[in-house]
Length: 66
Image (cartoon, rainbow, N blue to C red; front, side):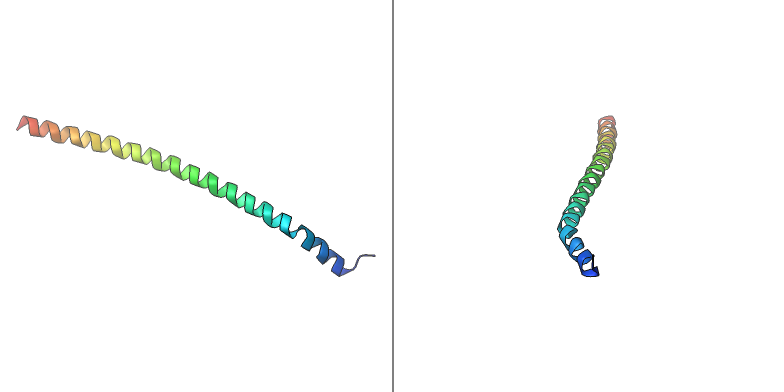
């Protein structure tokens, strides 16, 4: 026969495994989010650098025409 205390012991037995799996899932989620963020940041940085290059060209052309 199973008592209520037996269920608690079974839960306590699997608790470290459950916590370990939860930690691994959180770690994977965090890494995926960081990679997605870095991809967006890289794209925005490239766009900003292109705009800065265009501004430099325009400023340089104005200086030459003066």
